[in-house]
Image (tube, rainbow, N blue to C red; front, top):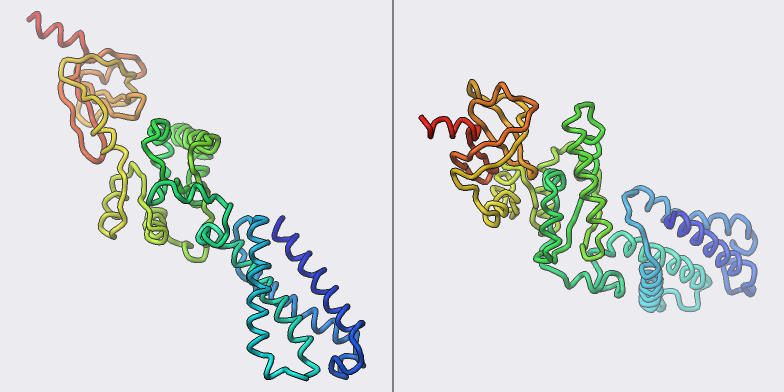
Length: 346
């Protein structure tokens, strides 16, 4: 919408400036060919001025502009045109073309300056003050959030502790991936996708979270797997990838992009389950070995329970026998509590 308003405003200003120049200029101030063919001259100059808009439309992936970008774009355009005309003055001095060259150079440079600042204001905030200036001071490297981290949900809990003040970046291809998961025909995937969208919405509503929804260049990232897109974006932004994906963690590390594995963070901060402790789980499927049942804790931790294959769909209290922790996550092994009591009595 703002881009359309810019083009319309540019057209009106260009037309007004050209018509005013051609119709109000004194005889001898402009070339005779323009005065004798004023209509054709106006149309030709307007087409030249609008051609820069056509070039700009060849690159459609733009960000939403701001008033500051418009203001400083105009200022930069006028300054550049003034400097350029100073350099061209000796060649155009006493020339009938001096006026029209000045008008065209000013219009073209002003538009290009505004367009450039609108597209890159997040990368050149030092040029455009008051545009998230205070947020630029927060943190060091931006954190690029993977879909697995959003679906997991623990990133929201970590942010509530205020120990992270880095900018969070959610690229558009991650949003599209979560949306496709939420639209899946599989109930489990659909639930996970909706949870990811809920977590993202929660982060957007939190005024304390510096969240940036990033529109990427579709031509640069087209046809590339999502994991590789994240790695390329990490290199481009100089940021770190927040993920639960073990394979992405390793691939990014090989290519020199730092990552934060939420499973590693959880392993470092969460209290360990000790053998003998009791937990309750709902058995939802069979395990790999005969007689095993598998359930999950609220945080997604897999729990493997012996002698529980016949208890699918029911809640079972189990006694922990061992815990396996790694960068891929944590697995808890146990037996039904009544089985442990039977073994102790025998």
